[in-house]
Image (cartoon, rainbow, N blue to C red):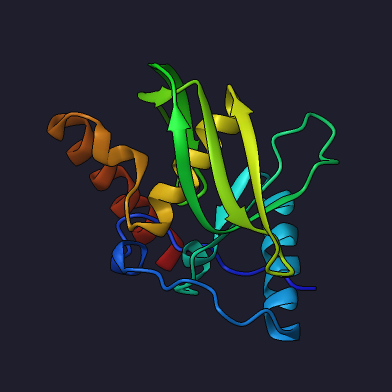
Length: 168
Ligand code: NI
């Protein structure tokens, strides 16, 4: 397993369209293991493949307190939702920043597991929020897109400054 570099906002690669997964081979299993290792090391509760530059509709998550419930979402789609509510959110691609966005508190999602087997899952709270956040990633969206233009500009400037600092 390996820890993969995570792309950070405003990297244009985070905005590219991802393709459905059709091949469930050893290469995919290695990618999934690497995404989990990268997510747990960060640490984070979710990570989409395209945050690591792989343009596939694949995301890993684990919203449990003790990090014992790894979940793989491949080609996910939301089947039903209830009402939206305000939730605080962050993203490994927008480090050290959190803000409030509107998310569905409950939803039902359909996806394929790591072996290509379809399943459906009811999610609530953090897990529901995470599913929406991850599907947004796969659609080239970031949670900062939901914020005011003033906030978005401020975050973008902060991120660019951070990148300059890293680049030396
Ligand atoms: Ni994210």
